Length: 343
Image (tube, rainbow, N blue to C red; front, side):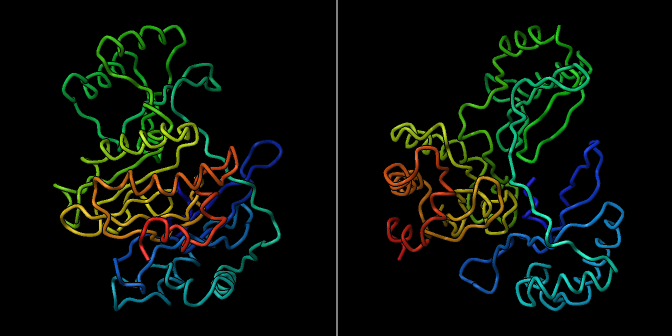
């Protein structure tokens, strides 16, 4: 999942023989914020350095105790570790962690480029069996009219005795499928009218929180309106010929960030009751950055049209294979605020 979204994260590195030999250490990520209160903000975690495998527990304890001793316990909205790093600095925090853990964090080791593999569709596993990455938009598993998703999954998993994993994009991976069963599973899902594929690249990694009516913090709709929003965005991408490099889009019904909108290339964040949203640009497809607002109080129905203004620039001025987030990060966000009429 988005390691930069967390208070503390460890990215394992492997030795030549394929065993874990250490970790890159991250700290200070977090997404909760409040609209129109700049003292609250989303923040991507900072890379502190690399440590050997046996130093994980001491370093983790040092991060936790440093947060305990220097975090704000008087104000819940200012209590996250991200504010400690933002105010005291990464160098200060790294030194504090080293002092408490007696471990030197290696800042010379180069962090490799991130890649985001897709687990959707059929894949062969090391043991010779297959896995099926099953797309479930926003993780919602129920029997829809004409599409008995929940019943189909229960039948397939039970009949073929499959394992199940849940991805960070809220999709399912069905594990342990015998190659001889693939065609039978596909035929049964087709018979039940239950597709396992994502409708298009735009949907592959799209996320939305439940929001209304079940979340007491929600200001606006999210999951229930998400298919409508995505379909509107898809029409824009098709019109401009950009569907093959569709951006990562995430939507929430409030600014607490449960569906990680701030690390998406396009973040749609509920701002005001009555269906008004803030739009966030500036993150990337790998989730290594957080975006900032480029438009405020956008009505739900206007979101695709607002995004089209930015997508036109992307098509006209971007490189042929450039992702939207990378394109945005070549310019000051003020340019996009002007284009979207939010200045």
